Figure: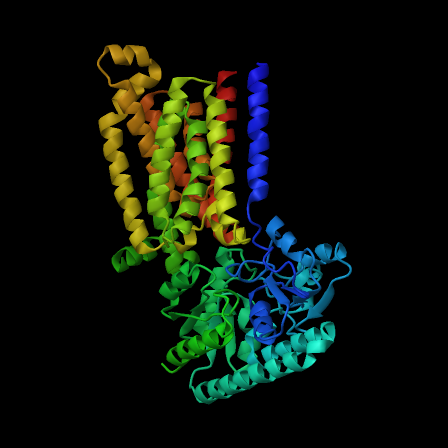
Length: 314
Length: 280
């Protein structure tokens, strides 16, 4: 018995040693001068463009590039490790990172940059299909803070980029000029994209779209599109039969012919509604997941433009 | 499909029949519930309720493997995994190293944990929450076709194997002495459960699939006086609960799967008290 026990103990010890020897994915930039952590993908892509050519900056993303929107996100230990030693944390704000409030309390010295600062938020109109009684309760929930998907509109995203550039300049004043030049370069590309999209979209005959979750409010506002219905009212929760029927009825009333699924979610629901109403399914990417590529936002928007032109000119 | 829709609309002039997805859901329920009713009786007789529960839970790992391999429709990965899982579980169950319910519980919890670990590794488990309670509203006509095939296969299995399985459930030693291949039959039966559970899990949900298998059979057992009644009532209870649950979920705005389970539970308690009343 004793022998068995000691053998087991040795095995456990060996396992501990082995595990602690594993390389830590976040240790790469240990000797960096400034550690910048972003909360999720779109913020990371913006920051990636801004820190280009600045020496000694270690840019890390808190969540995985595949995570998508942070509704109902739960932090993993890996995420907490990324926070360790951070000088600056760049977040979207507007309620997107509700899970971070608690975390930030444990890191009081981290400089916080809120990218959505100064952007007018769209208040969510929440028509959940039941009358009266539970509205009071819902008004106090997270929706009170407005729609967090500000970056999906290009104009807002430009403000977003400028906010991050200013924040980084303040945190790292020695390299202010580089951040600002990077911002100017990126903003020029975004302005060009915006002009191009306006040119292609403004003249299209149909303006109605149905989106998967409430990610496209700001986008629709910018390009004067009408979001006729949103398939999933609560992100990550399947709609009930009643909600599904309301959506179908709204689509039939408005005569909208285009449904937009999002690459981050399964298209099944959109397909069900498509079978019901005859509206076709296209894809719109709110740029919340993908490769860590500097031009990811530009590319995603170009693809959205193609899909929209195809969908709305019919 | 159009012909079936037209027929359904003409015999069921309700407002919910106006929507194609409700027709699809109703068709799916009408195909799924008899399968559950039939297989459920045998699961209950063989005392495999906990076993089928574990199979349902193992689907979570199956989904995760499917997602990891990038199969957009993870049914193939899930079915393969469930078959492997069932065979493994069955052989360990037979070897009697520790008591059967402990072994099943170990397997079941390992499968759930592994599935959760794999699916939550990107941080976003909520994407897969529809697998937990199922979403019968998004079933497609082609998938209804698959369910029809499964129903036919289940019927064939039931007709050909029922007697042998009954003998085994009554007394496996006696059955063996009469030339029934006990081990082979049990294995086939377990594989049938595995395949049925995996194919229907997308629509019914991991958390409740076992209730649909067990409750109608258990309710029927309360009141049935012979084998024929037992099976007939189980299928009837199952189908009635399915349709009633779907309709209630339409008017009440709740998820369809759990509502069906609740109606089945009502059947169970009603028959339970009926039985006690009759006895006294």
